Image 1 (cartoon, rainbow, N blue to C red):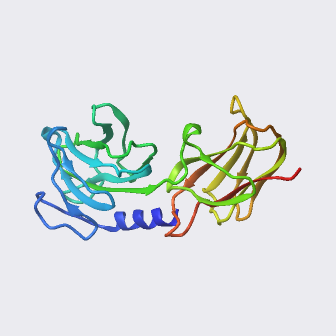
Image 2 (tube, one colour; image 1 turned 60 degrees about the vertical axis):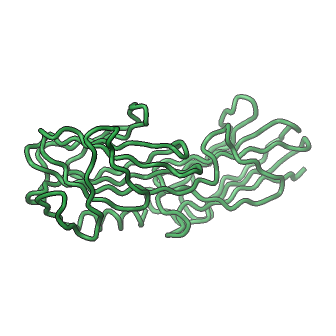
Length: 277
């Protein structure tokens, strides 16, 4: 979560007063003009910060678009859209923001005039276009800061795409930076017997961050064991009688885990299933 706090601090520290969209802007982002319709949406790059001056209410909606990577990933949007371009003061009315699919359907919509809007979207389709739409109901122009980022998700987010585990092998895993990331793993015993299941946190979390580990039984995928891991080395350890040829699942959910491996390393954990009898 430290990396998000740093981004928010930098974002809120920048004071940008722009009379038009072509004026120079601070180092916090590249000035960009939006499109007036979906067909004319301005393309944005991932892992790059942008600044846009959204004109007053009579100008209508402004459209931007971005294309997802060709691999499965989690996408985070950090959007600050509550300041006046004239004097940098909070706007009287909210600027609306929406994320849409290429077919025009809305995935999420929100607005906020007092704090930055941060939303993480999971399961965006690889190699696809998505659209951001903003509308300003105020009589004065407003500043929008846009930062789109993504992290490759090595561990799939559903039972259908769960990662297969091998008996007696330890897997080192990590969460994607998000407020709610799910990782699923599956195990098919080669022999009927007693197995030990271990999910252990290998990182230090703050008061808002933790992992939720669960073991799901074969067939109806019902949760039969669940534990919240809120400290380094905290673990869910249980033993189960598993039947040869059936499929069992482990689910790990990261709650408010934002930092990812190369940064502060938050969201690290390990998974292991081994036959003990």
